Amino acid sequence: MDIFLYLRRLSWMVDSKRMKTTSNFRWLLSTFVLLYLMNQVNSQKKGAPHNLKCVTNNLQVWDCSWKLSGASRGVHEVCIENRSNSCYLLGKTNNKIPTLAPGDYEITVKPLHDFRGSISKFILNEKNVSFIPDTPEILNLSADFPTSTLHLKWNDKGSVFPHHSNVIWEIKILRKENVEVVKLVSLNKTDFFLPVT
Image (cartoon, rainbow, N blue to C red; front, side, top):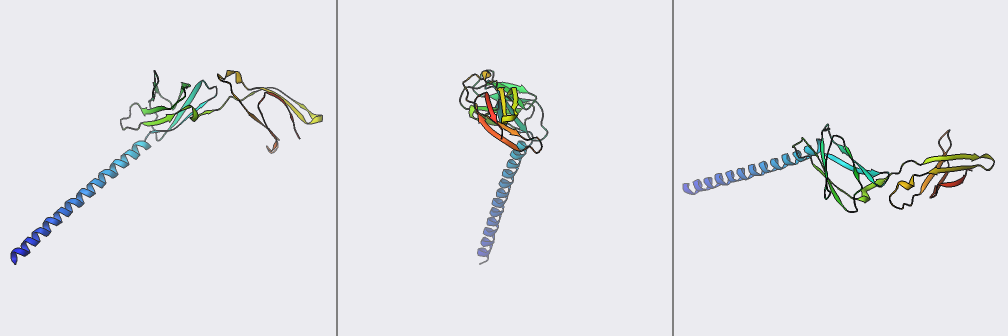
């Protein structure tokens, strides 16, 4: 009977050590995973470029910019996949690039002297580029007070666009005192008469 108790106690001690080892291994593994995830999050917070936006006002050059988290303001390498002369070194958070052919392009932005791996990748195509044309130039504005009509002629600089473009202009006439809308008209030509009532 003593042997049975001894073997049972020995078996219990081995099982207990096994459980401790398994428990310690699980704890160590979960700690490692947590530290890895925290490192990834912190490396993204510390200077990782994000929020890429591209705009154009003439459909020939795209002005692309991004934001940086934290205080990282050094030189960045910007690479555009599938282009000759595709990488640029920049000390600012924007870059002007010639218009890309239709399709998807992978843009990679990474700090040049940061070895923590805070690289950001973006997919860019012509559909993500906002077209914000220059403000039209008013050539002539005159009022016909007896008929409450404004005569407006402007130049939208549309001839600088490389492609045929349909542009619709929205014109608001506001009262100066309380900036209240008097008239709102959408037009697609550059010379018209606007009756104001």
